[in-house]
Image 1 (cartoon, rainbow, N blue to C red):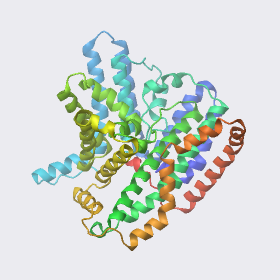
Image 2 (image 1 turned 180 degrees about the vertical axis):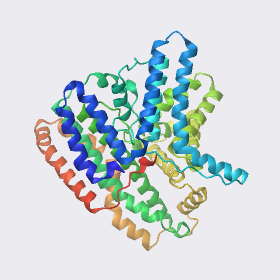
Image 3 (image 1 turned 60 degrees about the horizontal axis):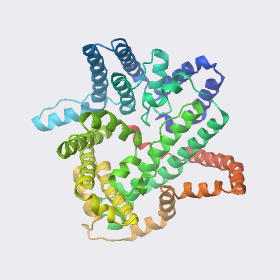
Image 4 (image 1 turned 60 degrees about the vertical axis):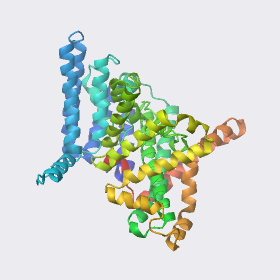
Length: 468
């Protein structure tokens, strides 16, 4: 994929930034839009026209919603046109194979799946839907300039893997934004931080998970099984949060402020808190456009529980067209329901550290469901974690612990707020703050060089969330 390729990082991106900065203010959106379409075409050339058609329909829907403010029937028709188009695209490119396979398994038929796949479809359809829904609700003003609207939809930093940027988040930046050296510097720092998370942490700890996942599950020891899913938890966190940091950093370089997508989720003290810290923009989207319209928690306990189950089943299905993702979503929905209505007082009485451990362990169980599309394999892995193979620790486990101990410790430390706390304390001291301001660019340059070396020499560089 584009973003993991050396040519993009070291050729396309610098040229894009140079052209963008040299363009007059009135032409910056045009420069950004052209660059974004080239970016998308680089990865999915045959689907650029789908992006353009989707944008045209949603732009037109917004214009109709603005013109016919007092005509409810026309407004509903415009909204439904946008929603049906976006959900239709999502169903065709992401879920058609799942639906056909389900029909075949139930009725014994042999329909062939179309085999369509469009990277980033989940992200940009949610963005465009948020625009028309917010227009219908009267939360935003219409975007009358088609180029500016296309610029918002196609913006390359976040089109492939988020964060999900609602129009309301950037509507002022789209029409008028300021570029400054300090903001661009912050953006470079965020970008390098994200790249380092992805290349130095996610890729390296991911090697441990790949090794264990490819092993025979029935031969895994308890220690190896737990090591594996812990490694995966760090891999997916640093993979996705790393990409989000890169997107936020690129946004700052371009003059935009994208929303934060992660906030040290593995330090959460409850499952509810975990989902306020993990993939924040997705949680916000489902809360605003599904949970609240369904009634939220305003219509009694039973209705609230139903609403939560609906939202979490859709959250799981959004992540992938497979039953394991639906069960994964329902698993977290049920845990949140239990925390809210069954054991709220019990959880609050538990010491904070134990609450963090309890939350992290439950999240690990969820990652097993998430990673194994085969429910049979997921169950076998659960069994291995709890000793069904009658092997607690073996030579392989000891070897893996010795080889990956440092990497696991580093991943753990940077998943907490410890680094931010230390840096905050350092910056509160003038002399140390001056040293940091001088050394920070050097550290960033060193990290960029190290990441470059890894990317050049290492063929293992998956982006896990591109598939969503």
